[in-house]
Image (cartoon, rainbow, N blue to C red; front, side):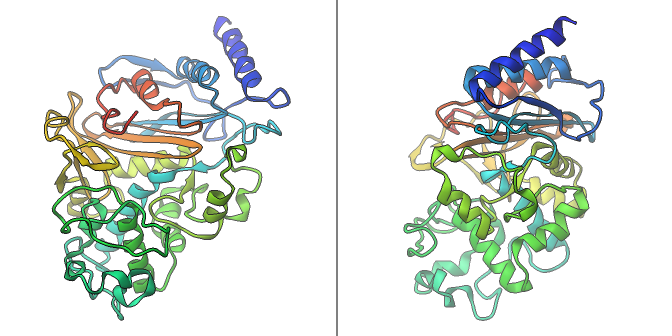
Length: 395
């Protein structure tokens, strides 16, 4: 009874902070009756779903978060899932199991899984040079013509592009049409790059004659039951897209509606993403050797911060052996080796981390102001993760 009253009070507090005309919703992500959820943290402590929900509601109140979607996977199933808040601040429409949010860079592990699926089908190999992967070569196209006189483009492979070691910037300037150049020899260093992922998308689309979203639907979304996920805007999302348009995100959102981007455009929710994480933990859909290659680090990361390779510090993350696989960040911890990815851009904060030895993972999606960082406190409270390298990610 006390918890019911407290939940009602917290809901009212969050509601007041979001919109006087709106209403806060607390929904099980499956859309069905909420099970009696109990799961364990990485250190074996028990967590009850209702207690976790109360914590999340309080965090939303204090951090002024209008929408929050969280799911925990453990022992081959989703053991906790909530979507809290509203789809839109102005109307106060409650978020529910149909609500989708921007995944931002949480798109990248999903795309890398697609690459692994296609590798299993023989379309490409991770270490295959990509210079002549398509005919004519990709440097014949306007988007990549600036690379044709630099012989280093012949060193590019899928593994290099997926591990952010191509030597590309994150995004060229001007975006999409500016010249793309190498900052260092491919495979020699880590420099976070959406351009590398987009180049691999470009190559796969040309090779198969199919767009990214069609490939992802066939190879990922349908097989894994991710019914509310897409790399491209779809009309069925009308009225169910949680985004703070008051933050001046119109241009960004319009691009999401018209251009699929393997590095950033995924629309999904924590329930769907949890299905993907379960596949990542089990290797579902992949040959055992491919699943192992997907999780195996290829490159040590020595930079002091994620987006600035000019600040090297080879000792900062030495104790956790921070590295990158073809699709995931990876670090060592007392709970075993972990796979992680961050997904932050203006108006949203997302984070996912998996601990394979504990068969445990969590995904967080939110509509939020980037001046607020909620992921560290959520993963600590919910699954007992005090190991994720949030300082390196500039949290």
